[in-house]
Structure formats: structure tokens, C-alpha cells
Length: 244
Image (cartoon, rainbow, N blue to C red; front, side, top):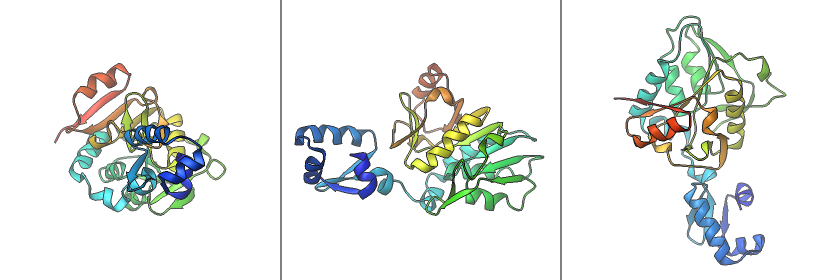
């Protein structure tokens, strides 16, 4: 079902029963499950892929929950030291981190985010831009192994964004190409931080990025359900809350 939606974006219920060769009752159960997981959305007479049509644009996300994202960014900066080599992911929350780094000494920032590049281009920070295909709607560079030598990077700390966080499934996102880069950076970095506002919790969207055991710290805002702290601690991931 997800494969078909990836190609077509929207499907009618009648078409699905024929193409998947399943009963209407089975189809409804599958639709309800995928809807609950945040992977698809129901529309009149059919369903649509949440990833293609449900993810808001970068411009929208740059202003949504801005105060919380700024708080998260300031908290993330507490973990960054002069002389570090860090990765800043493409995303509206991770972008805010760049705004607070301009006066850091001997800092190297590796990024796939065009807004991060624009923010730091005239600063003292050393910038390394990942090579690849420009994803215009996300204002990011989608990297490929054959273009960029990932294995040569010595990343101390990676600051990753995501669209969904659950105890059971870890972090997830809407776009497969973005997820590939994030997986690679999580693999390479000595320390992994996920910067995500509280609206991301409890969502498991289309593409899995990493289980919680691969994430050292999640930094979020004060609106998060405080019961998550004990749950994440049990899973081995620290939950840092950025207070107003």
C-alpha cells in the first residue's frame, strides 16, 4: 500500500481492494493501522500518503513553534565546545542551532542544510558542505556515498532532526533520501543528539531512521509529557528539556 502511495500520492478505496487483492475488511484494518502510525491520511473515498502531502514545507516549519525551537537550539549549544567538529542536520529546529554558533572558536560544522550554510557563511566557523542533489522543498542537499566520502569525516557530535519519536520505534521521518543521510551521520558520530519539539513525540511516520539505543540524547521543549523522561531513561536515551 505504501509503495503504491509513494508512486501515486493518492489512492481510492475501490482501486486498493482490486490492486492488493484483499477484502474490504482487511483493507480497513490496514488503513486504520497506518493512519494511527501517522503514515497515511484518510480522505473522502480514499487515502493519501502523509509523507508527500502531510509534511509541512520548510518555510512553514521555520515559523511554527519558533519559540520552542529556539529554546531547544540554545540547549543543544550547551553541548557544543570550541574546537568541536559537529554535524547540523537539515531541519527547522537544527537550523536554529546555527544562529547561536557564530562566535565559537575553531568550530567545524558539517551540514546538508542550505539555510545553515547561509547563516554561517560569513562567520568564523569552518564549513563543510555535503555534496549531492539539491532537494528544493526541504532546502537541503541529499548526499550519496559515491559523491561524498563519508568515511573520512571525524564527527564528534551530530545534531539530527526527525518527524516522529516513539519508545518502540525510535526516530522516523517522511523522506527516504533525507533518512539515508541521517542514518549515515548517526553511524559516524561519537555522540548523537536529536533536536525535536514536543509535537514529534508519539508519532511513527513513514521511514525509520534509528532505534532509541542509537540515540544518546533527545533535546525537546517544556511542553513534552514529563512521563517520557523515565521511559526514555529506561531505553538508555537521555531526555533533555529546554525550559523557557
